[in-house]
Amino acid sequence: MSILETKNVSKQYPGTLALDNVTVSFESGKVHAFIGKNGSGKSTLVNVFSGSTAATSGKVFLDGKELQFRSPSEAQACGLATVYQELSLVPNISVAENIFLGRLPMKNGHVDWKKTYAEAENLLKEIGIDIPVKEQISRLSIWQCQMIEIAKAMSLNPKVLMLDEPTSSLAQHEVEALFRIIRKLKEKDVIIIYITHKLQELWQIADTCTVLRDGKLIGIRNIHELDRRELLKMMFGEVTVKSMPEDLKCSPNVVLKVDHLSDGRRFQDVSFELHEGEVLGIAGMLGSGRTELLSCIFGSRKSTEGSVELKGKIYEKRSPEIMNKAGMAMIQEDRKRLGINLSGSIAQNLCYAALNRIGKGINIDRKIEKKMIEKQVSDLQIKVADTSYPISALSGGNQQKVAVGNWLNIDPEVMIFDEPSKGIDVNAKQQIFQIIWDQSRKGVSSILVSTELEELLETCHRILIMRNGKITKEVDPKQMTVEDLYAVCMGEE
Image (tube, rainbow, N blue to C red; front, side):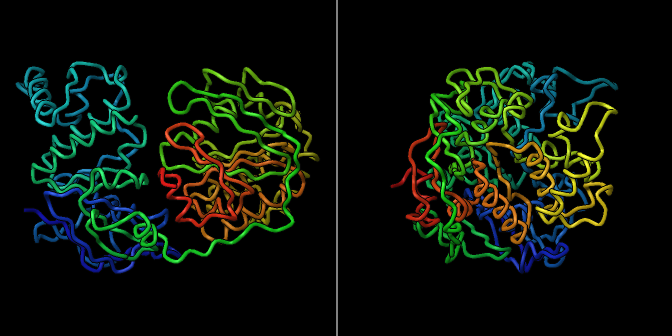
């Protein structure tokens, strides 16, 4: 039996204690669910295990031997492999080449293709995966790619396999196939650490459940001795949810109507209405189709069926440019890749969405531009000494305010927020929520998606529940606790 354990591990970042004196152990022959809400510290501990970051204090041991890594490659060499949610496969080469990338068998100074393909076939057969080893990755499904990632990790003969949200892009039958493979790996004396936000999966695949909250170990329980309510309490503690301001009333006027919208894969037959001044939440577990739905409404993802009607006009052909001109804004989840331009200045990032309002090319009306910049810096209380500074110099919270201010400059009718509080501190979160409420008072309507379900209870007039790509229910935030909302998202009434 193998054991991975930590003793008094802490990780200090500037202003944040991400891990606080954590002592925990994981043994082979079991699937260990490792969970906690965003900011709980679980990703930090996995990064310590995988060699991506070093602990500030404390020790990590594998089978009694202390581990000290300077890089992920050193962790892999010691038998710790991680399969991340973001796939790392190279699309234009074969399955076998991806599995042994950087480690291809050689013979007389050349790649030994016969051995490469044979070893890949044996590995896939051993873990029960039936995929041609000469097939190009670009021709495979997401599920097959996920399996190849696991095979790639297993080719390292790991003692520890960490799976980060492995089912986030999988359909139900694909999830069941993955679980069969995980059970086979469990029998091979591998320590399996399973990280997921899909809590309903835990009773299907996990043996134990380890919970972190605010950097501290809350407990380790046998999953079959734990019910969902107890688990939620371990994750959240005694949660006090603030209510939205009493004066935020929405009009009965419909500004946005989504009718039987589908994208052919991640969500189907979605219909709802958004009212003037309303803050509408969409709640669901990871993989429920929330982000894909928002992207489809905004036009950055194509729909296969249904329609989107904004202020009485149906937009059959949608793109971000078209919806921008129509008065719709979207604050993306991936702020650093899609929400802001890290190489640009604060001033530039505040004006990208409104470029068609301040001129074209070199013919920019600097007076209008300056007015827009000053208004958002003042209204949103963006802490900056000079807007000519690079946006990369700002904190995450202030970067998010810039991303919001950029879209406010188009005077939107509807704002879509996908994980607006991701990666920002508690104070900045409250400021973002205040911005949403201030816009509501002006008649601007908002759609809000957040993995932190308590945020939806705090900010929204009503909440739609999304499961398996469909809207299944509507709930009143005033009548729900965070535990209730999680239970409904998992399919429990």
